Length: 130
Image 1: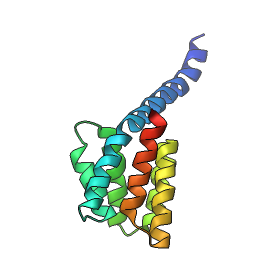
Image 2 (image 1 turned 45 degrees about the vertical axis):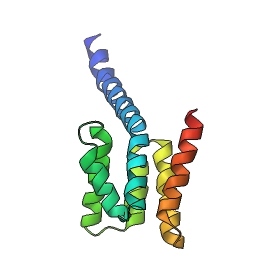
Image 3 (image 1 turned 30 degrees about the vertical axis):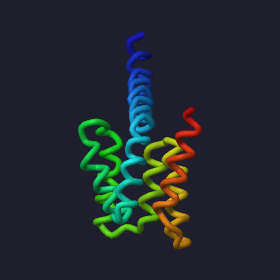
Image 4 (image 1 turned 180 degrees about the vertical axis):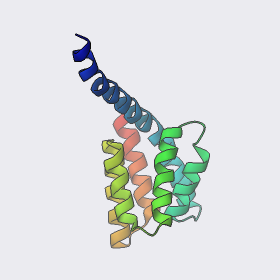
């Protein structure tokens, strides 16, 4: 009996912690996206906007701030922006962040406005929540 508990307990605990982390990222993404929209429309680049999200959201949504901090670190180390954004979506496991990463990669690749892409994503996110 104890062996069975010892065998399955770590898996259940990790699954619980992973789901809780996904939930925290899911709850923090609207504020993070709104802050990114404001920063990019104010003239900051995407990298600086992600840095600002990291700084401003440390106290309220520390999980998503950690994710953007990791993105900032990877960008500083010289990784390509599209790889960093794709890893952000895959690492978190939240479908909305995967969609956001895909949209930002496409906007960067085709040279369209990142501010417009963020604004459209933010508006569509609000419509899907209502």
